[in-house]
Length: 375
Image 1 (cartoon, one colour):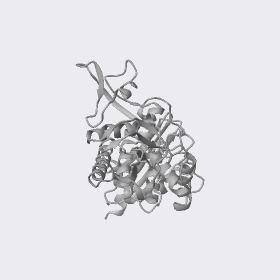
Image 2 (cartoon, helix red, strand yellow):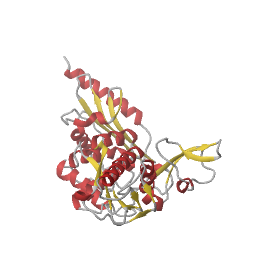
Image 3 (cartoon, helix red, strand yellow):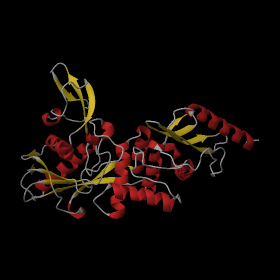
Image 4 (cartoon, rainbow, N blue to C red):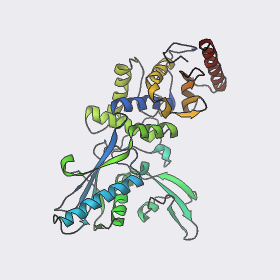
């Protein structure tokens, strides 16, 4: 624990490299704010080929390309097509195939520490991912079938077939790898039809033919600040690693890879924050190969201080927790009676004892420090 100037108030094993678990998301969030910018908005491209009548979609890593966003994008595309009809550029608002371009990210990126289950916790990353690559369903007892548990999201038969027999009455599962590639296109197909567009073909994967000067660009409703607030509140591994991968592609050029993303985080920590010797292999804290000392995490917190309110809060504490088997961590700030922020870091590896005692001890140290400062 330190004060807001970095002066140590209490420490134990401050320079021992430890597994940070999900408290690492604070570093990823800080790198995204400082690298992409707090007001950065992801973009997704669409291009209509008047000759083939195919619609192409190209993603650039938007972590929140959710049904509501896809609906807005579909309206933007349909409005553009109807205008082309009224201007005499095309005879009718017809789309043959919807072609999804996933090439801004490398295929099958594997995040160290992630599992291979159908649990949303293991959602995989990609250039164009709809609804975290998951479907949310419920059992309709009246019609004896599964339906979508979200009114804004359809559940076509192709997706309903993904639900394993004997599933829960309400659940969210990760789609198969092949369907993850097409899922954004399948939702776009549904919403475009709802907008009055005639679609005669199928959803495919392919290469986007145009540039940003000749396409329809959709700008996400969510800024990086919005994304980070959700990332920290829900400890979302998918968002954290989408941000990491995007930073890697922007720094070193596409396609995004795990190596490029990890390199950005390590370089940011070393060159921008002056932290030497830490090891970052992914952006969410899933991997046990991540290594950070408590002192380094304290320095990360001090750099993150302008955005402390993006963290979860409980009374006068703003914090991020992290848990793996045999790992328990907590990092954040305690707001003292003197209205100063006191950064604190708890990292327990290979033990579950002492966590609550340490929390109480650090709270007492803040009260003591405030009493010494307030006349």
